[in-house]
Length: 178
Image 1 (tube, rainbow, N blue to C red):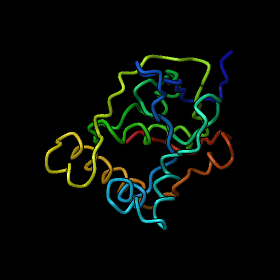
Image 2 (image 1 turned 135 degrees about the vertical axis):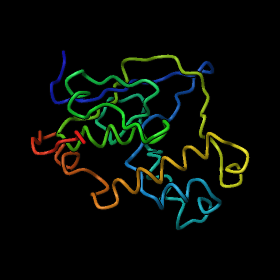
Image 3 (image 1 turned 90 degrees about the horizontal axis):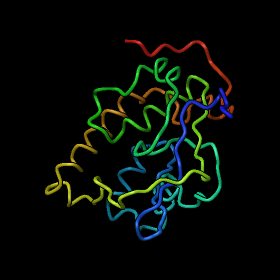
């Protein structure tokens, strides 16, 4: 059964070792992204900021509506894809998933994590690394570049779209065609 209010669906992923990778996050903010990539994440007052963003308490064995899903396995209806206009080509790859999910919520569509559907994962995270890895990891530099584009794009918008707060009430007044 398809829920017409769901704009994007992601599934539980399973690594070869049986672990479930973290594929659900809360909407990013610049402070959380800096904290999680640096030794600041070890400071008691700041540790919670990174953990909140990373949604460490999320139960991957329970289906739920979420802020955003990693796009490594995401389904979006053709109708929603058309309304959003697809992926924003300014992103290399990494911040395209929170961008797409933000737009789903902003248009009034839910972003849903489905735990009952399980797909295989390779266990790799291309953007892993901390501050010092920026100098040796080109992919991490793309991730940081994309983060700046994302935060500039959403600088004057609320961190959490109003529709997310309202849990998916449709909004007809947003147009993404540029």
